[in-house]
Image 1 (spheres, rainbow, N blue to C red):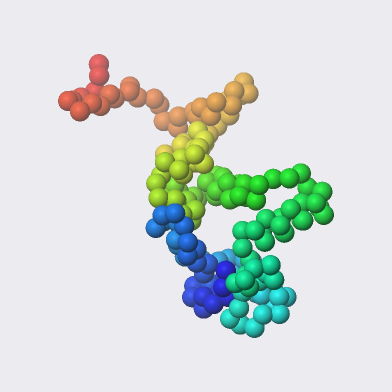
Image 2: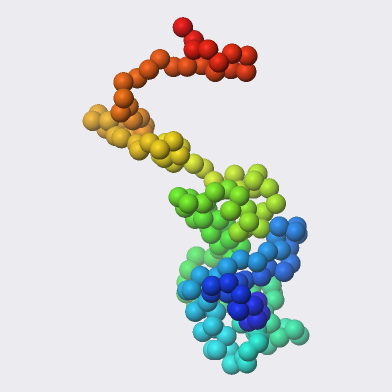
Length: 173
């Protein structure tokens, strides 16, 4: 990740320049918190702008590679005594947290994660019955019996169900 590119967007942008598909190569806005962390990281490395945020003496290019990141991750796990995990799992955790955000839709999730199809997003997006009710402008109410099925009490008297099909739009009697 290069330090150039902070000039665009409210807090700057991050560019993913490599990936398996065109959707994987994308530019995303940064939050103020991410911008602060990356600026502090850049200053702590002693790099002059523009420069690498994650430099490494282990590589010919001068910046972090998969191999140097793997070594740093293993060292951090050992020092912290955290149970070992694959670093890539953090991407899946991030996607799951995004997907469960009330304001997140599947298309935006695809854009952020660099996925080309909604099929991948659907592995992470699992709308609850409460979210389905909210989409119809209804709030779930809990029954006095403790049933938590999400049934709601209608505000108006119930009307007979109307059945619609491709061949007719008349109410079923």
